[in-house]
Structures are given as structure tokens and as C-alpha cells.
Image 1 (cartoon, rainbow, N blue to C red):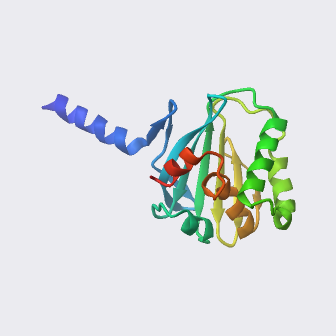
Image 2 (cartoon, helix red, strand yellow):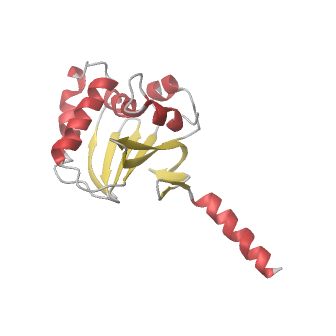
Length: 184
């Protein structure tokens, strides 16, 4: 009987612990400013068939409606867990630039200052197991964490919308991953 109880506890803990993707585990929930956010969906971003990072989006309530997520002035968290090493600062910043341009339909003028501030946090080589976390809070802005260290806060709803739009906007980084992030 004890053996079955131990197995049952293990299984319950395994399901509650998180979602295994790409060899890492994304937690099912994250706390952001004392508020629990739930994993809405997750996926693996690849480049030239190489896994680059696992990504998860966390929301107050699960949603598959990209427009509702993009336009809601509600908290969210994006968590990126890198699966490879040797990504230069130039490459990551080129990817950010392309992502923001696609997310805004080329209309980045309104948030150029915020994009420049954001890109300034990534002036190093990215290696495996690094974690980037972007937490948006209405009235505060987007907190930028790199390996659990707060690097800065970028104000504004327009920046929030553009950042999350990189992955779930009308011209996302990866259409298949967009569906996974939206829980589809």
C-alpha cells in the first residue's frame, strides 16, 4: 500500500511541476508581483533545424484569442529558456529588431526609444540554460529579467503589445509555435 501511495504522490507532483518541453520544464504557474499566472501554452523556437529556446506565455486566465491577449491591458509573463550556446549579442539584437518590425507591421517609430532600451540589455553572448523573463504589469510596464536578475523596466502598453506580438501577432516568429502558445 505504501508503494502505491508513493507512486501516486510522484505522479501528482510530476503533473503539477510543469510542462517538459525540449528537455527542460516550464512551470505550470509563475508568480508575478504576487499574482499567479498560468501557462497558456509553450513551444520550441528553432533556426535551421536547431532548437534555440523553449518559450512559454503565462496569463491570468487561459485564452486562445490572440487579439484579446494583444489588446488586453492585463499582466502576462513570457519565459524563454535557451537550449543552445554561442548566440552573439549581434544575432540576438538582429532577431529582436526583426521581431519588433514584424510585430508592428514596420511601424516601430512610436516605440523606438523602448526598443533601444530593451536591446541594450542583450549585449552579451547567450548560452544554454539562460532564462529571459519578461513580466508586464499594467501601469508599471515590462520588467526584463535575465537569469532571475531584474535588468530594467520598460514603460508603456504599446511596447507590451509589440513584445508579445513577436510570438502571437499576425506575423509571428513561428506560426506553429504561435498556435502552441495560444493553446491550440
